[in-house]
Length: 451
Image (cartoon, rainbow, N blue to C red):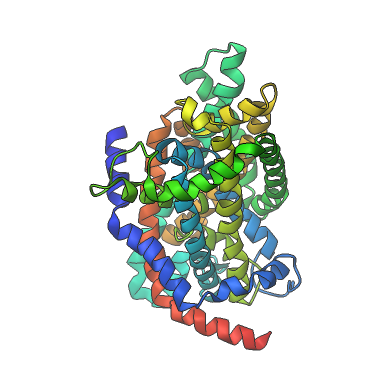
């Protein structure tokens, strides 16, 4: 099963998908003439609530939409995903994650603007946003198979298998094993049941409870993680410039790459690794974030697109870079065979031997648990589109069962599964976004005249 899922993931992440995701993102960047980047200040004003209007259509504020989206993207991709990238690809992998993020900011602007421009009504008559709705409303009913494809893979992509798997590994490696507790299938199962109870209490309350919880958890977890990482970097300040420069030099030499080659070359393999881990981290072009941003209370699509664009910047350019530098400056990427969250824990322990790993454990727990809440919302929206709003609650039961599965299976299997499914979600999202992009540019020009 592990080999089958790895083969599926590798096939999904072939040259066509890289061209669609990165080539498509570059096309959007050039088409807009870097317009979204010129309005970063305006995006922050929108996020702070300057333009909020209670009479606008939608369910949640700009801030809650961003934090709901970030609670799914700022998660294990930033801790375990970065650790995987560096353990396999070395420092240079981070550079290609940056490229993925910069291109991803443009992609996210377009996809989340479309999520508001082409909101559709579900079977209960409520306004909804997301790739499946902007495919149907923007391209027409004849494109429904593409929308259905997104929803089918979206239900799988929304399963919290990586987050739960890595949270279980963190609990085992950081708390249970050092204290002499025997870990195995039974202990993982007990932990899975605790997570099930916690998750069910939030996700069965719907979007408003999820977004309210996320808006409280996300800012605090980013601040705590940021403070810990800055402390580690200050403690190792003398080697920070060396490793920061190494991110650039190693990106083109690929001297530290340890994985399989890609079409005969290790540099191509390193680039692909960085793009995969970047996509896993910020999810730009995958289509999950437009489902959260599509619920924002606004009648101005461009505003939501600008707010959404901040996501990859916060997620990959800031949080992932900090994680990467911590792993690099402490040297654990060269001295240990650990992978995933265990490698990041080793870096924290290196600088803060007594309490570092426990503080990381707090961050990991908040990162993972907040992600659990948002992903369930994405999955229910996909099922609602396919078989009606009155049936969407059935997804929560599948979701809860997957928590038990994830806590008791190998990390590589879970990571490859989500990688492969994300690749297949990106196909309908990116194709429809590229086709509808000129309409976003037209809307942007009209918006600039209005403000």
